[in-house]
Length: 354
Image (cartoon, rainbow, N blue to C red; front, side, top):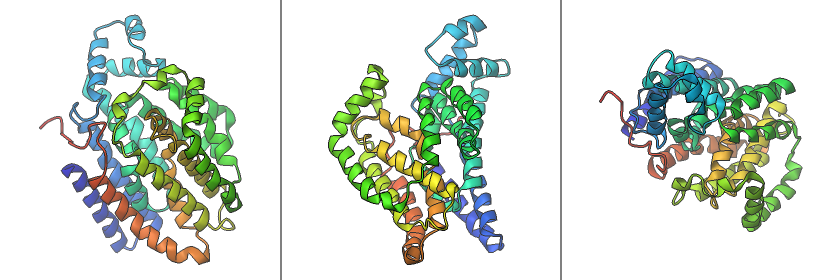
C-alpha cells in the first residue's frame, strides 16, 4: 500500500504544481492523468509475479509454451486465439518480463488516452479509478484486461457511428476474452436519449431488479451457459460489491439530478447512459462475482461520465456540484486505503528486483 500511497501523493503534488503554474484546467487535467497512468504503467511493468492472482499462471504458461512449436502452442490451453497469437509473437523477442510489460502497455495506454481526452476532472477521474475494480484487475487478468482496453477504440467507433469498425474491434476483443461480446451493448446504450424524465421509471426499475435479481440472474446464466455458475469462485466473500452497488446507484441518480440537459450534448448523455447500464448490471454482483467481471467493460467509462456531469450542472445544483467535486475524490481515496478488498492480491505490492 505504501507504493500506491506514494504514487497518489505525487499525483496530487503534480496537480497542485501544474495549477500553480497557471496552466488551463484542461492542461492541468491532462498533465495529471498522464503522470498518474504513466506511474501506474511502470508499477504494472515492474511488479513481481506474485502481485495479481493470475500473474504467475500467465508467466508459467508463457515460459512453457516458448518450448513448443507454433502448432503445439496454438493447441495448448483454452485461451482465446488472439491471446495465443499475441503470446507467440512476443515469444519471438524475449522472455516473461517483456510479455508482462507489453501487455501492460496495451492495457494502460488506451485507458490513459480515453481519460485525458474525454474526462474533464483529473482528480475525480483518478480517484474513482482506484476503487473501480479495474485498478486491481489490470494487475491480474491479462487477457480480459486487454479486451477491456479494446473497449476504448470501440467507444470512439460508437461516437463516430463507424459500425463496421466497431464490430471488427469487438471481434478482436473477443479473440482475447469471450466476455467482450457484451461490448455490443455499447452502441445502443450510447445513442439512447435517456433524459431526467426517465427517473420515474429508472428508480422503480432498480428497485425491481434488486427485488427479483435471483430470478433474473438465473435467466441470465441459462442464456450464458452453466460454466459461469462456478467460475471465479475465489472472488466470493467480503468483496465490497454491496458497497459499490449502493455507490453506483447514488452516482447514477446524482447524474440525472445534476446534469443540465440543455447544456449537454451526446458526448455527455452517452457516458451517462453507460453509467446507468453499469449500475443496473452491478445490482446483480452481490449474488455472483462473474457479473462484476462482465461489468468491467462499462465501469471503464464511469469517470468520464462523472467528470462531464459535474461540468454541466443546472444552476440550482451548482452548490451540490461544488460540494460533490470536493467530497467525492476524498471519499474514493479514503475508501481505497481503508475499505478496498484484496481478492486479487495486489495491495502488497512488490518490485521484481527487490
